[in-house]
Amino acid sequence: MVFDRLAEAIVHGQILPGENLRDQGLAERLGVSRMPVREALLRLERAGLVETSASRYTRVIEITPERTLEIVEHAGYLYGAATRMATRRMDDAQRTEALALLDAIIAAGTDRDAYFQAGRAYNRHILASCGNRSFLLVSDLVYTVDYVTRNVSFDGIMHVVRPMLDRLRRAIAEGDADAAERVVRELHGIDGDLPEVAQRAMS
Image (cartoon, rainbow, N blue to C red; front, side, top):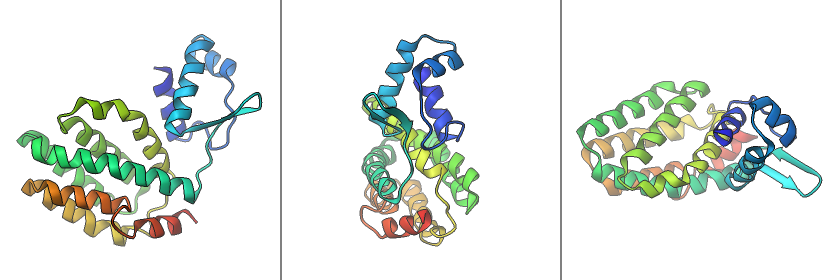
């Protein structure tokens, strides 16, 4: 609970990049003891949302182009594999939901908040539909991806992303797992040019 609340606060900007996190203050704010706060901060550090320096600080990471590209690349491998399995295994209701969520992403265009909400819902649906519960164990990364996505301007990348989303939608609709995974990897810059575009969006 403490981890989820702190992660959500970071993602939604209620705790800002670079802000120092003190376990006593957070414990008072959340109405818990210091122990679960300390455990949550360690988990946030492993997820890449928090950085620490012994006896100096614990703070929310600053978003840099380099860190953004690392997180996006990591997410590409995770979501690529999950999408491959989900495309093969999801039932009709799950497939219909996936397509509706993709439509919402496409409709969002350059509206960052709408794109964020739709993308977040879609990613969670894919992880839940892939038929492998182990993928849910890496859900901490989802918060880190959300954190980056929430803070990136989409003005300079949608002309690249939109055709990929159309292809992803078609692949999932047709049950083409190979094509679906390929598009997701390309979306995250593993097999395409998105890193350069994403870096321009971060500048």
